[in-house]
Length: 592
Image 1 (tube, rainbow, N blue to C red):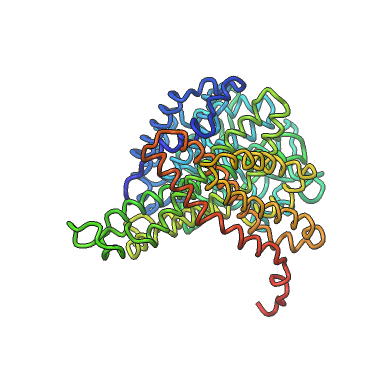
Image 2: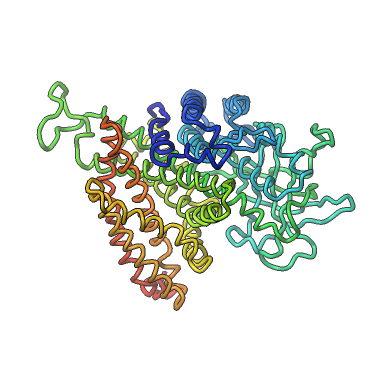
C-alpha cells in the first residue's frame, strides 16, 4: 500500500480558517494555549509518528494478529515498541486534564490526531482510544480517591482501559445483563460473570488494564434501571500506587475476526474479581454513556481515518496505472496508455471519496469544537446550546463517517481493480477493518433510531432547533452573496427536504412507530448529507476569500461536485422516508 501522508494542510484549514477555533481562546483556557503555531507543530509531529512508526506495522499486524496462550495475549511484532514510543511522546494524555498529568489540549486537535492514527493503523488506535473513553467516565463519575488511583496512570499510558458491557445473551439490550456484583465488608464488591467482545481486554502493551464493568447489585431493580458501573483492574493497586496481586479475572478466548486483527477482542471471565462502585448504585448506565458517547465520536473518527487512507491509496494508483486512452483523446502521448485517472468513472469514484472525506472531517472537527464549548465555556446558555448540538449530532457523526469509511474502502478497491482484491496492495484490509465501525458502540441502525426516537423529540425539539435555526440563518445570509449562490441554492433545497422529512416523522411516527423505524436510516443519512453540505458551504465561503492557489481552488471544485452529485440524493431519500413502513412490514414472516 502507498505510504500514508497526514493531511495537515486540510486539518489546519478547517480548524483555523473555517472554524476559527483560535477565537475561542478568550473564553476557554485550553484554546488560549492552542495557538495555530503550537497546533501545527503538534499535528506535524503526530503525522510523522503515524507515517513512520504506525503505518509500517499495519499490514504485518494484520497478517500476524494477536496470539493467545494460557490466558495471556501477545500483540503482533512491533506493537509493544510502538506503544512505548507513543506513551513516551505524551500522546496518551493529549486531551486529558493537567490535574492528572495530561496536556489539556482541545478536542478538535485530539480528533485530528486520532484520525491520523486510524488512517495509519486502526488496530493500534483502539488501545489508546478505549483508554481515553474509560478516563472520561472515571473523571466524570468516580470518587476523588478512585480518580487519584487510576487517572494518572491511564493518562501517562502505563495503564490502559476497557469497557465491559456485552454478554453472550445481550448486546444492545443491556437490561438483560446477568453479571452480578456482591458487596463485601471493606466497601468493595466481587464481580461474577462473563463479558464478550471486549476490545483490548487482555494484552501486553501496558502493565495494568482497568476494566469498567456493568453489573447488577443484589437489590437491583429489573431492566436498565438496575445496572451499576464498577472499576475492576487486572492487578489490584497497592496504597502507594504500586502493582499488587492479580485480580480474579482472565481472558477466556480471543475472537477470530474479519478485521482489526491486531486488536484483541476478548471473552472476559470475572470470577469474584474485586471492584469498586463508580457513581451511584443502579445508575451505571448514565455513567457508562459518558464513555459510550465519547466512544461513538471516536468510532466516527475511525471511519474517517480509513476513508482518508483509502483515498490516498486510490489516488496514487489511479495516477500510475496505465489503461487505454481517454475518450476525448490521448492525454499522455509519451506513454503507451493514459493513467486511469483520466477516465470519468474513475474520477467519479475519486471525487466522491475526496468530497465526502473532507466534508466528514469538517463536520467532525466542528462537533469537536462544540464539545469543548459544552464542557468549558463560561456562558451557561452557550454551554447548553453546544451540549444539545453535540448530543444531536453524535449518532450522525458515528454513522455517516463509518458508512463513508466502508464505502470509501470499497471504492478504493474498485479503483485498483483486480489488484484491489489482492492482499499485498493493502486496500482489502481497509474493507475488513472498517466494517466493524458500522457495528460496535451501537450499530448504525441503532444510531438512526436514537436520532429519530430520542434526539428529535428531546426538549420538545430543542436539540433539533440547535441545528435548524443557525443553518437556516446561514442560508438566508449567504443567499445574498452572489458568489455563494451556486453552493447555497442546492443546500437550501436539501435543507427544505430535511425540514419536510422532520415534520413528516413528527406526525407519522407518532401515529405508527413502525413508520419512524422504517424511515430512521434514510433520515439519518439525509440529515448527515445536509450537515456535510453546510460544512462545504462554509469551506467554499472561506476558499472564496483566500488566495486562489491550487488548494483553495480544489476546495471550490469539490464543493461544486458535492452540490451537483451528492446532495441531490436527499430527493430520493425524502421519497423513501415518506413511503412509510407498509412495504417493509407487509411480508409474512414465513415468507422470508
